[in-house]
Amino acid sequence: MRGRSFRGNNYLICNICARKFDNLHLHELWYFDDIELIQTLIGCRAICEECHNAIHFGRSQAVGLERQALAHIQNINGWSEEDARNHINSSFKQWIRRDQLHYKLDLSYLLENNLIHKRKIHWAWLDRPPRPRDRLDALLWSQTLLQLPCAVILDTETTGLIEGPMKNPNAEVVELAIISLKGKTLYNGRFRPLYEIPSHVVDIHGITNEAVKKSPTFKNEYKIIQKILHGKIVVAYNSKFDQKIIANTCKIHEIPVLDNLSWECAMWAYKGYLESPQFLKLPHGKHDALTDCKATLNMIKKMAKGESA
Image (cartoon, rainbow, N blue to C red):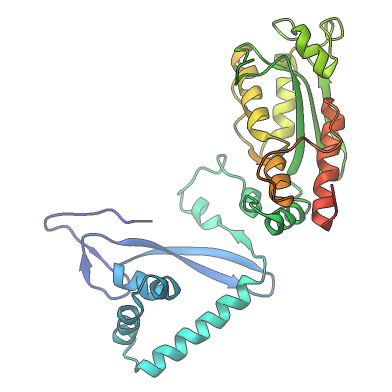
């Protein structure tokens, strides 16, 4: 992160070399508990470009700034080149060792110093796996996801699509299911839509207008769903669609969009797992929200074991 740039007689001082500059980097300070495996943010400091390159020596090597970074390390510490090299080698060994471990993040420093609003972030989101792009990524994604207590699986059936040639601007959720990563059903219900379900959509999921005639509306169930999803990592097969259709449903019913959650896409993971050039249908999907939640969970478990989904 760049520090604020000042002009004229207003300058910032680098916290390492104590020289004045008009443009600095903001560098995090971390404490590593190698026993409990907790990485704790303990502060920040403003550093100049030269100090930034010295701290991130591996990056400096990659971009051709190794000699300049090495000279700066020697100058700041009063070291010989041998001393500097020994320090760098020791730091790299420590980095390689820590890179093999999975640390939990402790960012309470940000809350304690009023740098973020405590209701706008959930620490468990920080442990989420990176977006999978190949089979190995998908394997790690699945294994990590199954260990997260804050993750749930969601699926919807709708009154239509909100994108593409068959799009319907009034499309909304007509069935929704949510399960835990242990397979427990947290929510499973149907809703009476504001607009009729078109016949060609009924042919897909089999939910008729008559079947939901006495069901509650999505607005009626909104607070229950909101409470279940609050702060959760929500996994869906084609999460982009579910996220948009839920947002559209909220818009139609004139209620706030569900925003205190984080989305993960199981379809992207499956595509990477098979190293497929295109997206694939959910294995054993039935166009039934609860059944498809369970099919998604089963697929994730199989990917975590390296098995065929």
